[in-house]
Length: 454
Image (cartoon, rainbow, N blue to C red):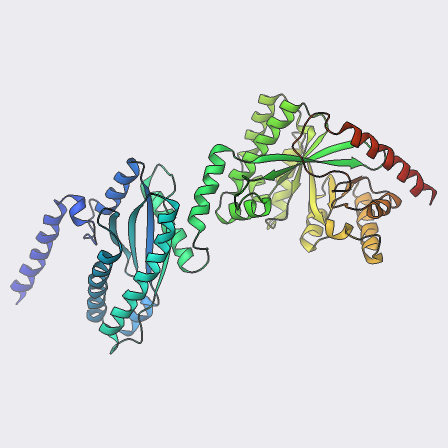
């Protein structure tokens, strides 16, 4: 009996070794787990070298570990064989031989299918096909195992392989996103938007707009805030959507760095002499290489670091204020200054002000909106002004849209104002709207005089 078992083991090993010699294309569906090569990965790599777009479709078996605990090994082993067998049959009905690159089992509870994609519409069909395959797979397995298990349930998700030089890393990243999509942590269209964002980063396809920040004492333009818009007629034209998705896709530092580079080029080419405000998150500031890269850009464009004020946005909370304060000190040593954005909108902005001691505080538009009609907001404004005075900090009021709001700011001696009342965001043109700004200057001075008289 022992000899028979030994012969059986060796027969299995020889069979595996014989398959090892076969070309990858002949064992592209559930190949043995070779230690020397991965035929499916090899086929994916070959497709990418031909510049073909590859999609990964994941089928994840739910609660597999609970089944392992409850059922004997002989049953789970048989169940795995049945799943693979049924899956192969279903696959042939939904994916053509020419589109199929390969199928493999990454873990005992995960099957991944690699297919060629030739258009966005084809990728959209991937999600539909995956859902249909999952339903049929569950039905057929239910008939096979209904006596032993209540139901075998699957989750499915799709992802496109990104343009990474290492195929193994590209597959691993796609698997990660497909799993998140299967768990409903990411929308089904995530992969397409990810590719769109990558293309935006590659081509720098964004628009840089500027909005003036007015000195409410002199009526002059104190500085410009750099604002970003994505490509027109795309889901990323809205900056909130653009930066939110970049954050979700873990591409936020790359996007912010692109905006900074474009802003510095704009400052240099347009010969902007006023202060320039650029938004940045704690995530990007924490990059140890950012400061060096910034200084290289300033040298390249012959700009002075004292012209730039970084607005620390609340898109990411600050977990370690001591570390962030240390980072800001290293930037300040090079001449950069910092503003805390959205002051008065929540506890986090108040903590940022007290912990980081910014050079400038920007009062959130929610405080300024209808401030002439709400005494509570006026009291909040006075509190923020008192705080700023005690830490020797300049105050900018954002979101000023009406003359009555501007009057309250003048009466309370707010240093600067920004909003549609003064000017809407526009592409920067040197000397643009000179007449408008001269008129606005005279108006601010007149309002200032009236406020002083009151």
